[in-house]
Figure 1 (cartoon, rainbow, N blue to C red):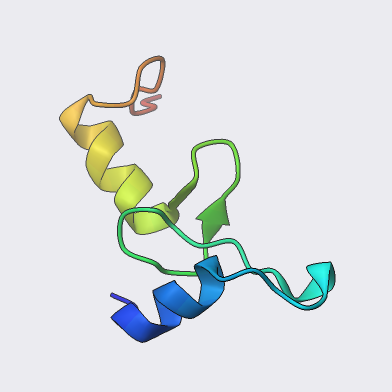
Figure 2 (figure 1 turned 180 degrees about the vertical axis):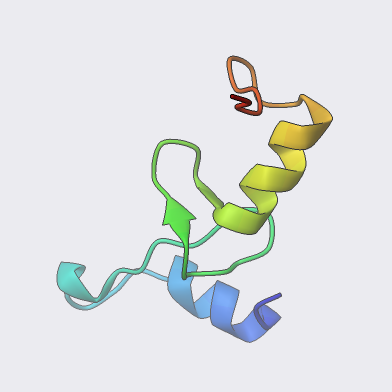
Length: 61
């Protein structure tokens, strides 16, 4: 979990657009971010296993 201050800082309007970092909306993590779902890999996996993301299911072969 990212600190509250770090999350608040990332939501603030930036002086330069290239400084923007994408963060998971659930936990604030910036690494392992998936743009399509606006989640980090850890939160994505949790929600996918619970069946809360429509159209996503665990692969098996």
